[in-house]
Image (tube, rainbow, N blue to C red; front, side, top):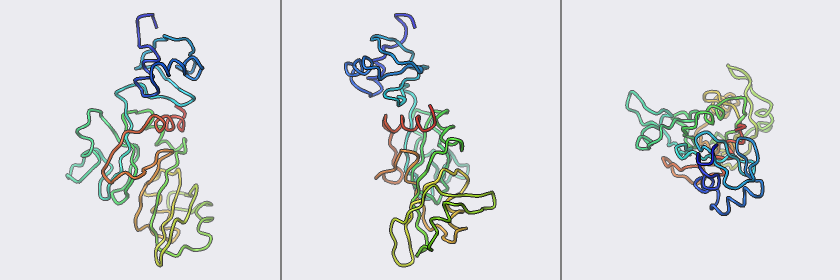
Length: 244
C-alpha cells in the first residue's frame, strides 16, 4: 500500500487485543508476525484491515472489528434456528438485539443443551461444518447403566446405522450410580442426531445430552442461555483447526 493508505500494523495488532503498540512493534521486530503469508519485520508497515490476513506466532488474528464469533450455551427446548414461524423459542431470540448478522455453526436438536457457536465469519463457519476438516465435538451423555464390557471398543470400531457406519473418536466413563452412567463422547461426525442414534443402536439410549466443546472451545461454566465472545486464542485455534 502507499505510504498514506491503510493502518499501521502495530496499531491494528493493538486494536485487535494482541498487545500494546510498543509490544506489537517488538513482535514485528522478532519476526513473529505474518501478513498474507509473509513475515513482516519492518516497522510502520500499513495494511488494509478489511482484506489482510494476519498471523501472530502461527495463529490467525481476527483484525476486522465487525467480525465476531460467540459461544452460546443453548438451553434445553430451544431450537437451533434464527427464527421460527410457530413462535417457539429459538437461538435468534437471544441475538436479535446484536448489531451483527449472526448465524449458527451447525445445530443442536431442541432436547440437546450446550455449546453452539454463532458467527458472521462465513468461511470459518463453512469449514467448521464441513466433514473434511474433522472438527471434533465433545458431549456428556447420561445413559442407562451399568455399561456393558467392550462398549468402548464397539463404539470406536463403529456401529452400522441406517445411513452408514458411525464411530466415535473417544469414549470415556465419567461416573456411574445404580441404573445410570455419565459418559464423555468425542466424535467428528456431523450427521443429524448422530450421538443419540449411535448410543440407542448400541443399546444405551441417551437420557440427557450436553455438548461441552467444539474443537478447542469449551463451554466451561457458562449458564444456559448465556453468551460470550471468544477470546483471541480461541478464535485463532479455530482458524488453525480448519486451515485458515
